[in-house]
Length: 468
Image 1 (tube, rainbow, N blue to C red):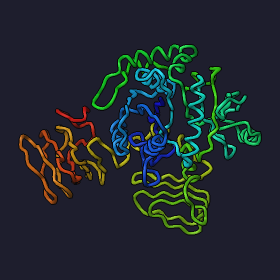
Image 2 (image 1 turned 45 degrees about the vertical axis):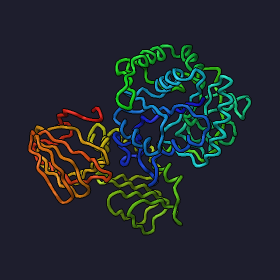
Image 3 (image 1 turned 90 degrees about the vertical axis):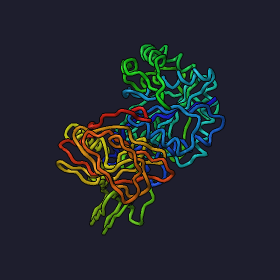
Image 4 (image 1 turned 135 degrees about the vertical axis):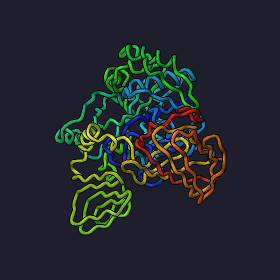
């Protein structure tokens, strides 16, 4: 049986300022409809005979993952929470251990949560070919038919042909220079390394025992101590953190004699930069891609994204502008690979710009910061049906709540009452309080915080239905 594994733990630094650590690109509706993670789930629905879908994710994103699984009505799934990032080799190994525990004949289809594939039938055909090769004990990679001499990807050189339209992998090449990449394209023998795989799970573990026994040992220790937490499975910190950080390519695929490749020509894009989004998006007559309120005069071959206000551009060419309510990126489109370098610099100097955006998702809903300055902060809070904030109190701030939509049950300082639209209440500093939404309509409120410290860590929780 085929057991999908979705690797969903990345940060998406190259899509800053839209992508942040708390809300990375794989969970953002980049095209206004569904997130890349949700599109990955939809593609799986076209494959026959699936076992459990396993999502390897960051603990900070657990409720995002759960909510997007719920929205796609995915029932047979597990969410494994990695306490720290350790690259793909430990993540794939943990998923293989989980799959084998359920199904000794499991084949695991490893996918990234942030890829775009436009030709789903071609994807299905490639997976079918990979399943056949995996049944013959091959470790299968998906090689993307290259469309240009890309210097940002690794390459696979195809070797001797195998059954099911596959080939042995003769050579792995790291990111080449442009001349070398051009020669690869012209030869017709090289493919982009997609980072997608299909493994026979038992044989994968056997190969890891040969080529990365230390990593497999640590993963077994961690797997034996996995602890359920609500709807999640928490991988223990100490054992997993002791794994060396390494990709499955380095740890296994470049060493094993069982490496195979299936070509994939399915409109693949890794959404690895703003240039990638420009490539796949519909353009106007002048080659521009725009989103949001944008006004342009004599502007060509540009990507302009306006999230919170109007962006106006005059006389620009080959430029990328991405506006959010707290940051604006302006870059030559030829330099977009350096956005990650900028992201890393901001992590050191102004980390709040890389960690959270104004819209913050919580298991009960979300909040957006509308205004803040010394001593005050204003938020727009949305509480989903059946959602509930934790029972909590604050040491440094008081709060004023005004409901603008729906009706919420309020507990404050030992009293219980219902607050309707156009009604408000005061939460004194130190008062134990909570809001619940028992109804079927979303509750929205404006929260005004006043105090000498307004950080999110000024919360003392007494009870929380989400186990935080």
